[in-house]
Amino acid sequence: MQLSSELQVPFTAVEADRTYPLNAMVTGGRLLVRPDLPLLGWEPREYGWCREQACLPRARAAAAETPDGIDVAEFAELVGKIAAVDPAERVVAFADGAGPFAPSLTPGRAPDFTLDGVSLSDFRGRKVALVFWASWCGCRYDLAAWQARHAALAPYGLTVVSVAADRSTDDARPWIDEALKDATGPHGPHPALVDSEGSVAELYNVINVPTVVWIGEDGRVARPQDTQTATDLFRSMNGLDSAASLDALRRWVIDGDPGLSDAQVREHLRVPTRDERLARAHARLATWLARNDRADAARRHLETAAALAPHDVAIRRGLMPLTGDDPFGDAYFALRDELTRAGIPLYRPLPEGGR
Image 1 (tube, rainbow, N blue to C red):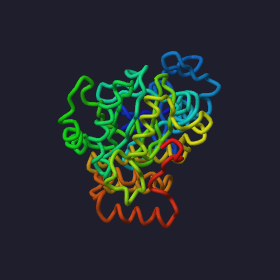
Image 2: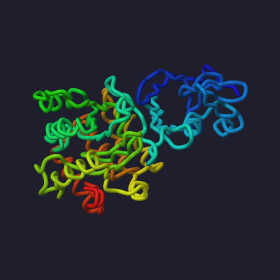
Image 3: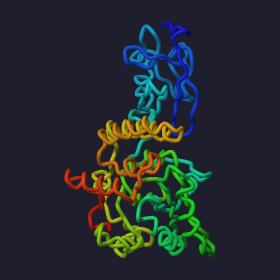
Image 4: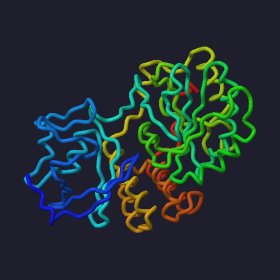
């Protein structure tokens, strides 16, 4: 395979944890790169492509090979990624895909992550309530109440870890500072993290906030994605009972009762579809474009993401501030009306038995 240097142009490749230049060319609608250079952290070897201890045999890698180079989108899917390409803007973005090389969310495995210097694996041996919220959601007012739950239940082995689904740390930080300003005592403030690249929401298939995932001491999912609140400020809108969620949390932490059987955890765990994964790649592309003053191009990819995953409010509402729309204004109410007409629920609480 040959890829003429005269035909290559500089692209920007965007992953959850890095952005880097990528020389490529577009032909027949395919993004191609030289076969002798690393791609997505994988190194070409005589017998295949390898990353650390993992290898993709040459026979399987052949699915991404063309006479003119390696097809980036095809290769991405072989190694557990999915790609969204904008040839006009010369950008390609990647999100988590499927397969043996992809990070996976299963009842037996809560994927590890690191944000702001904190890793989920730091809390192995303790129960973790992983709480997703955002400054663009009324659940921002619940953060102090989650801190209170952390303080009350930490002596029994619980750590609350909150994750802000904000693409700007500056949007989330004032709410974190306000919620934790009086956090004292032996267990201090809970780890309050900001998922500015959407990578943790991607791992846990979070499609709206508030969403809470319970993770046991052994790293297994004890309760999958659940809409839970810690106050009743918006109960008239969401119908959720914060006292019930606190009682359920206490039963799990103190009595060891998660409220769901293993079979129910498997039944209710939401694993992303291919369209949902591709929507996140387009959302990552839109985020990069918006941050680089290409708002019109960003909107095109947000529209594509919305078509692929119309129910993903974390993308559709969460990225409104990047394109100049008010996530509490007309754009949000139009989104609510659209989802209501389509019969798509905004909130997805799990069965009452565990709430």
